Length: 217
Image 1 (cartoon, rainbow, N blue to C red):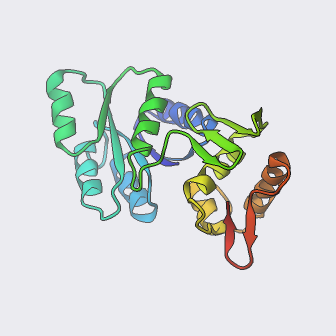
Image 2 (cartoon, rainbow, N blue to C red):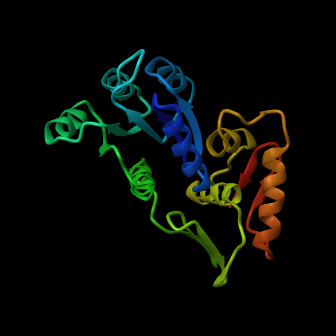
């Protein structure tokens, strides 16, 4: 899942990003509304975690711009004002969900995953292929009933390939959807991660390499 965190409190924004990355998400961060819109114009995000009270461009305006994009991004709006009127206004602006501050990180993660499952086509809560299963919420992958020792990035790659439902996924697409903006597009990061993942998945092979195209399950 590719997520944009838009929050002008730098410590909070960076803390949220760390938590989401530990959950296997690819996370970019913007500290004001102007930068948020620039990110959204360049990258298709599954979910935008959007603080309402932003410098530059107000969060309401950012939300409105996102709603006008043809690629529908789910918006989770954050605000320090937690009254019913504030929640109603946030949802009226087009936000898909609303979370008042302060919030528990566990609830934030759960709400982001719930929004991610509402993308089109809808993603089932448990992904499976043969004797391979993945529970994205619990971050647990098993094969033939045995839990696999996958790190967060390997879990994220596996989740993306399973979600593709047999479609060939290029290395460039994996880099864009599973890694964040800090990833170097000229590195062998995807290939190295794929090699480790294949080794941990064991035999018979599950991931197929399609020459000059990419990977698929």
